Length: 468
Picture (tube, rainbow, N blue to C red):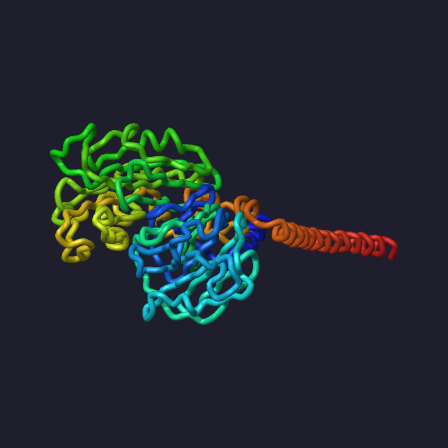
C-alpha cells in the first residue's frame, strides 16, 4: 500500500505545472572572446528561442573608426538576425544607441532594431552584464541584470536549421568582450519528451577536427558511439576506412564523466580521407539506460539508391531508432541537412531486423547536385520500451534525458520517483503514507475489538445459563 501511494504521488506531482526546455547549445563552461567570424557552432531556430549569457566588457568603442562592433549573432548571413547584438560607438553615452543594440529579425522585417528601446542603459568599460532574452512567435522579452528592459508584442520570426552562432560576426569588427555562461534553449512539450533516449550530436559547419563538442549527463556518461568522416568515399586516401565507427578516443575522454568537452582530433582518431573536409556524428547514453547505442553511415557513393540493415536479433531485443539524417555533409557546403528520423522509425521500430532503402524522391533532396551521406542511431531494446513515452524533469524544470531509474527492465519502481521528488513533496508523501498506515491500524483494532467483545458476550451468556 505504501509503495503504491509513493509511486502515484511521486509521478503525478513531478509533472504538475512544469515547463520543459530543450538545450540547443550549452557553452556554460566556456569563456569565449569575440573575434571576427568566430562561429562557436550551429543551432536550429525554433518557435521559442531563449538566450542567456554573461558579457564581460573590456574597452567600449575599441575600434574607433567603426560604427558597429559585433557581440553575438545567430544567422548565416548578415540579413539573418535571430538575433544580432552589437555595440554602437555611442554605447557608453546616454541615448537611443546606448548599451546593446539588438535586431531580432521577423518574417516581414529582417532588421527591426529601432523597435527596441531602453532608458538608462549605457555601458562603461570593464562592466559585467547579465543578459537574457525570450523570443516567441508573438512576443519578445529582454532582461538585463535582472531588470526587464523590453517586454512587448513581436512579429513572427522564420524557422531555420543549422544556423551559425557567432561571438563576433564576419560582417563587423568584434567588440572587446568575453562571453561566459552562454545557454541557448527552446521550450517543448513535457508530454512528448522521451526520457533516457540516446543524445545525438554532430559537427558539419566546417572541418570537424579542431572543434569541440560537449557531452553532459547528470549521473555519468555511459555508452558512446561516433563516426568521423561519414562523407568520405571509397578510394579516398586515408589512414582508416571512411564511414566506420571510431569510438575509442571519445570513450577514453568521456566515459563515466558527468560533463565532457571532447576535442575532435584527426591525429588521435585517424584521417579517413586526407585533404577532404569531414563531418562528425556522435551519440551517447547516460547511466540508467543500459542498452548501449549504435551508429552507422551510408556514404560510399550517393546515399540515395543504397540501403542499410539494422539487426537486433538475439536476447529478445528489437529495434528502436533514435535519429537518422540524410545529407549530414550538406552543412559542409552551406546547406542544411535533412532529419528523416520519423521515416526510418516508421519502417524499422519494433522489428528484430530491418533493411531500409534510402530514396531522395520520397525523403526530399537537402542539397541538390551534392553527393550526400546518411547517418543513423539506434538501440536494441526490450519490445515494451520501443514506444515508451515517459518523461522526467529536474528541480529547475529542465528535461532530464539521462533519467531511466523509473524503469528497471521495463517495470516501474517506486523508489526512484520518491528519490527524485523535492523535499516538500517527500514530506507530503511521508505524511500521507503515515495516515494510510494509521487508518489500516485503526481498522484492524476495531475489527479485533468487535471480535473480542463478541467472545466476552458469549461467555456472559453461558454463565447466566449456568446460574439459571
